[in-house]
Length: 639
Image 1 (cartoon, helix red, strand yellow):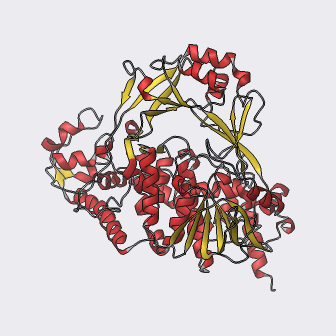
Image 2: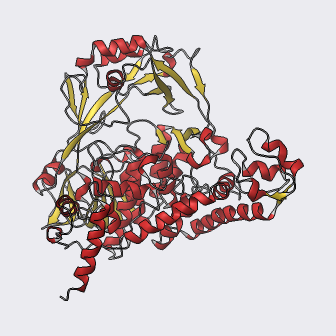
């Protein structure tokens, strides 16, 4: 291949890959003031949903709200493409609610591209990256297989599962590819190997898709949408200006259906288990424990009588359905036999077989807290290449990498989200300090601050940081002020308005709390469990046009004020630890007051702050105390 000796164009930041990490990285970098080149092997697949056409869920939905709060695409594109919306965990109280949306796959992809191209600083480029341009241990650009060369001071690598990807269907079918129908990239991985980066392999999978016209829906459980109650993005008016208070015009909603894999299907899987790529020895890589294949479910949970499956629509332009819960690498003939054992699918037609995929990832302990490589200056990694799984985790990393690549080019301070600020902060901190031994997925249990780091208050938590990084337009700043002002107004109304026993008692019946004996401030009644602030406003005759999500946030702040205060004090302590910077040149081997294990782990991970050191497994409180002592001692020693 002949490469041009001169770059075709020069950018501040080049982003390789245009999936969920790449598109967010490009937009974040552009918002942070960088000129951006977004390079992808096919422009038509920008924003492609490779697996389930769904966004959000427990913890993941909070990440999407955080991406949205920082100006990202995912929530906005979801509002334009959602087929169904569910707020999960509503029976557990709003503090743990989790938004999830099913999307029209085609509409989502087109929405991402439209929103992306509204940023004048982003230039899309079709091409397959053959290699990075390096000047010693510093990146200077890239070259494509098509012979095109582009220069940049920073590159963000978001190649997903395309790094030497291999698809498996049974033990006899192996296809090189990043996803079905698209080729893998081997050249870039070989170059990074040669540059000394550590590379490992993970495995993930996808279920078969089926023709919805061949499904018998008679006895299936229908799951309707709740879209009229919720929006994803605070910037509802992003694409088309609308009258104040008018809701987003979502696409026409569609239901999902619930069915089950039962004993007949389990028996078929058990009989053919050695033909699975995972269990037949074709794949040795570790897969995601919390998104297991159906083979894993049958083998590891033999006591389960059945496994729930969701038949989820792919879009308005097709009757194709995604069989959520049936990820598999069994031969296609066995997949069909299993499907036809399931209620409602006795005559089903398969449109696409499920498959497993093996791919390269780069252990993220090789990165600093901005997701920049320690080995190659100016090179960032985001998404599945860091050993994560999920659209949402990829998007969160893309935002962090994109903002920091732009700020690095412009010689500004790094943009680092602490664990106390966000789930994105938890994600990045876990990756760079603890590493991964299986595909990483976010859970609420990973956060120490899940009461105060919620899906409803993402904008309140992160907009000040976004403003300091200059991520918003004037119009967006006005929307943020209005949204946050509505929350404060709801609290003021609750604190200044009384409700009488006659107005409140019907709401208190069945809550296990005593009826009112006299008029009392709404704010006090709202602290009781089982009583919503919106219902109290209505009962007291308070006429308000405040957004429902603003009222929910105000209710939580009133109801759990004591818990929030304690958690925020703990968050402040962690933030103060985050302000204690650990010099990159620190010789941990010489700090003999620390345990041997601590010295070894700190030297290997090289945390940037005391807070990051505290999150490394095996670093004890005694080690942290000794580290603080050693830092103080070194600062007293004259140079």
